[in-house]
Image (tube, rainbow, N blue to C red):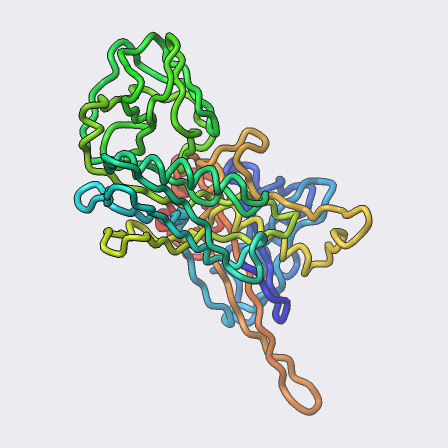
Length: 426
């Protein structure tokens, strides 16, 4: 979310790898020389490390983050003890929207009348960077011939929708994966234990020559009716070509999948099918000032009698790295780091962990948060004015999703603020 500058706002970001054993002792003055980059502490007005309990009501304290010996400390605004309120939120992962048309795995089906045109209409609802003024609609269409089947309709719509999505302008496409699902049960593919295939590719390679035929269906990502199926269009030894490129909704970057399964063509031809539309996490770069959001869309089908099921609604999450990056970026700007306006621009300081950067993974880039908010009064000659302020403390979690029992500066800060670190574990 975007923050406003009509009050005092700050962001402090911890690093779970910074241990309390390296902190300056309670009672010592905290400086950029003795506070590690990514370490966080509470200090009084003289920059002396303290516990909140030792600060008298009416005295001020700050939350401080180390940024390295060559940079000044990242220091919250002065907080007068007794005026603050506190809230906390453990990490919540983002959830992408899932909508099914036809079979949802247990009920529903697709129509399959002869010589009939069917279409999916997808209306994107986000006011995002690629679509700021007006949501647009995207269509996938397919017309049957004679002897139509649900399989024909499902794969025809999926191929056309995928092609239409790919033709949209860069930045506006790729936000939804269209997947074909079926209630047909799968069986192991004889002779193979894995398949290697890159996301966006139609061609994969099994670890050995498979017991498979053109027209069979393959579940690449795992067994079960919730997982999508791909149609085998060509086989050459261990190399297989599918009807459309592989699109993942989780495990981005995965190229090897264990134990793929198959549905033989004879079973697939008479099975019940559905179309599964799953939002895909949008690309995000805080330095390009792209606001973070989860994709939201409305899907309708040309045959109004066909079941459309909302399986999951979109959720942006809490403590996801994109949200932390946005708050850190805004906070730095409010503190005067306005070099982004220069030519050439100067990037703002950032300490948020980003998956794929510096060896970080999605598991190491999760945060829980503590928010301190306060109202201060300033007496003037003709009246009293009130000012509001807040600081969000983002506490990095370890790869297991824990803050508690980590012996880290983030855990120690939560404890001194009176927030049980166990309540911040994901």
